[in-house]
Image 1: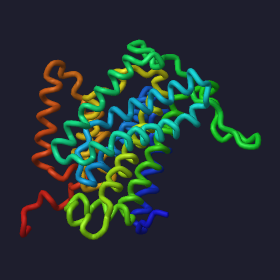
Image 2: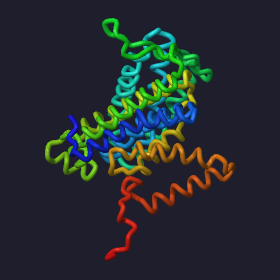
Image 3: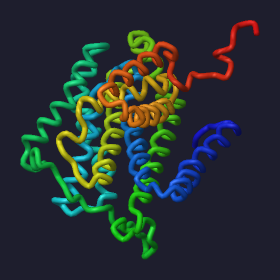
Image 4: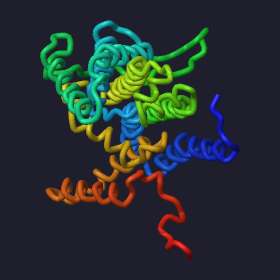
Length: 328
């Protein structure tokens, strides 16, 4: 159970009310149902970004999260379209397979530190994309299209989740599922960070040699954390593929892996919920600058650099009194 103060529980309740009640009500008022897809994408990308943040927590810069998101998307799509499995069963399987790949890859490369690990992880997304182009089961460059919508979940004749194909607004259903997954992901992250494993991860971030000297198996912890990070990427990718109803080798590319990292930086590496806020700001920030045409990327990059300089600890480090002059 999460250990929160009264004010934190109140804040958590307000947050749930906003995303599950206020936002759908506002969208229903405006009639802009396309926002459901946008907000669902933000929720799922923040889940993948959470895995990158977790790697930062042990002192590793992971620029390869797009690889595990793409793995999760393909595993779910293949199981649904070729094996006829229910999407709801493929969702955890996609995360677990991504975690398994993370363990397999992580055992050799997690020995590296700093820029060396970052460069190796950067290559992973391109390797997975090229593998998807080459394998017959992934249909190469054609990708996997016409992925069926998630079916019904029922227990003892009681329908828990309806068949999305029968709904008038499947986008709203996807939005709710994406938000539930996001809440569960960050609740898990918060619990993990405040557990014994979280304290061990923090000690590894500060000094691995010292952590090892007191009996901590740092190699084992690194692999476990990388597996959890990969699991989050796989879950986010699988759900994203289901919403888009298609998966291509270009669904997640190197740019996406870099953006996952930027989401963490912008939101704040010292805050569990930093990836969530960073994803929201970067996603909508890029769209808002779309009208600037060829200057979009220039202004976008300039604003990011300025924010990093002014707020090196991320947006969540903003305090009401931080801009006041000292002594006043």
